[in-house]
Length: 450
Image (cartoon, rainbow, N blue to C red):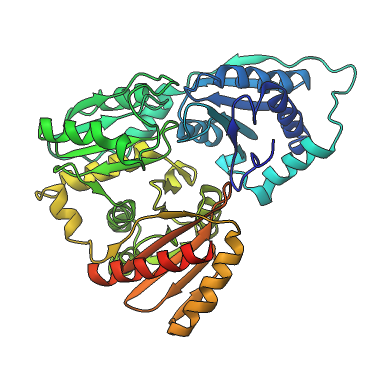
């Protein structure tokens, strides 16, 4: 059980870390955490252990006298949609997101798709499971389970954003996750898009490639198909469909923060002066583009629960993360890879340039991407790095999430993993040479300290 209760979800290896017995206890804990909720919504992804964990969760809820609405095999954004659209007080999605096939877990949200973070509920679930004697009171009538098919409503919801104005070729890789069937159904209604589907059938073995689109091996099929078909754009989802990555017409990965900037430009056309949220790993081009287009950039820490909380605070119409999560007020402030895909297709269709040219027109700086280092004491490493690099005279030092130091023509963020003894480095500079120089400097110092 150690380490499965994380900053914004519950996740571990099945059945060693997360088993049916443990999920049953988590279900009982949810009943205590949400005493006034009578109908719980529960969905699941395509993992092979998801039916077992779904059964354990729903048994705990119905044994406690609560009713369950089973929304079936759905993507995580579909579970968020169900929460907001149908007014459920608590929604549980059985998923391990982009992790390998042996993992499973859950994401939990309260009313209006408000995600639980460790501070706002997951920590209390952990305490209840570990410390409380969770028992079902005598004399309770068993709750019932009813099924709800949300596909039609969800498809209509996504199609509301469709403004695609010219014919485009799209290669779409669903990573054999939960999003495949609904994605195909959506594009069945969009005549302008010629779809080339890959890995569409849900299969929890993930037989074609890793379900994590951040990994280079995961995007090779997509890259090859984009080049083979002469497609305008390629897109790939993770296993539970909340994360999406994009490939240009040459088969090259488009950085997710550049996508954030592009979507922000379109969003601000309809929402002048709005606040736009971005995570602190993003290129400094993101706040620059937001300001240039009349918006107000708001920086936040990494993680979907924190992004959503910040969006609600500022009533922001949009937020983006470097990890490929995109959040929309029109989607109950929740992330949706499919909504992001429609937005990007809108942008591409309204511009006669190739995708690579659109990207290059706003890509101003040079970034390392996220680089991980295994260390014995992440906190000590971050503390030492701050002490040593302070002598270089940073213009700004920030501790919003780990350590961020900005030196004007280059900056870096160093933060620790929530689950492993790792520190994660993101660094950006005005020139490629400066980026490589500073990356080498940081890498050598971190390796020396670990």
